[in-house]
Length: 181
Image (cartoon, rainbow, N blue to C red; front, side, top):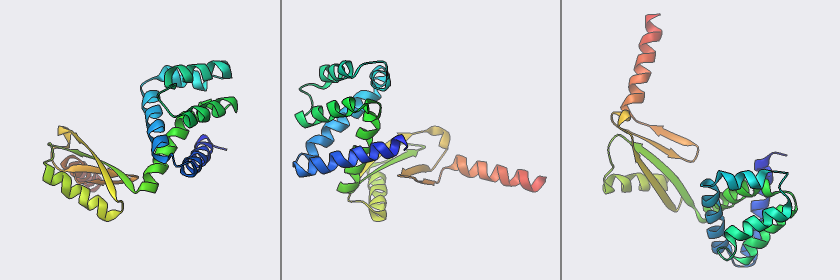
């Protein structure tokens, strides 16, 4: 069974438990904090994935880092995962929990890369368009890349809309090259 499938199942179980205990929001905050911490610490990721490091040692490391900063149920979840030899998938499980939380809450994450900074009006137009496609709440992340020359690249989930001038020029170049041959 793939790591993603296993992580999904554990995340689903944690969601069910959090909903049952009425701690869904708090658990989401704990998982987001955990994901952010592991993103910035490849050493911690390595310790959790390392089969040579004992379960007790992994639990102590997690307790030292997250003790008192996350809920007791999240700490218990970490301990269960480590003791079941699943510490290596704690990170993808936490990521999947956050993804499933977003789906349940109708939150859509979108990113737009533009050639120039977007005005607030342009950002609002993009947010409204993404909402029209589906989603109650849109979290828009913006980035500027002058190499696009003009236009933008919008990513929503696995969809991409590329209206950049540089991509259009590349397509034209490819078409000309094929017609010349």
